[in-house]
Image 1 (tube, rainbow, N blue to C red):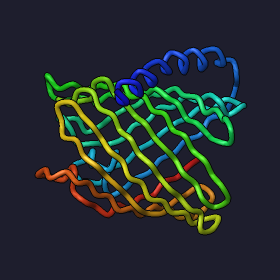
Image 2: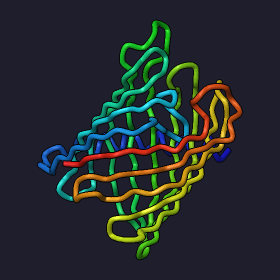
Image 3: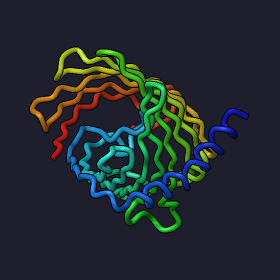
Image 4: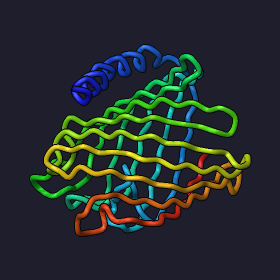
Length: 231
């Protein structure tokens, strides 16, 4: 019942996100960009690059109020014969009762995937965040009615706690659960930190693991190092 209700809520929010973004298209807003690389492409604590290094790039537009945004991104992967995945997303970031929310809908597409491979998916994400001094917390709910490949509907639940040790150094730990149709259910977790080497460049070191007992690199534990540059 809980899964049915949360899925329905995410699906219902999608047209509101699209409508709000369209209604505020006249807001000039501002653009930001980010590029980076890491020793593994981890999503929901599992590898999307079969344990190999990857590179990525994103472009984001944000309204002057900070409420509405849209983004596009590219990242290298290894799945279904595809080596590249693109993403387009629209979202809103409202504030309420001291909490920050992030609600978005994204479409992901795997370029040049094998014939017969399900190469695209819609994903709906809802984040609720709160920061008090150096401490922060986030709850995340994600759902796709039909994932890529043989995976059908899936839902991801995650809780994260963070701490800013200095203006440049921060750390966090997160635990999540993924429930999937036609694929393995698993629990994953990660712990690590990031350091602002400069105002625009961040270094990150994070350890990932899952309880999935599956051959291959996708669900294995890994220590991942990465670097990103924002401009």
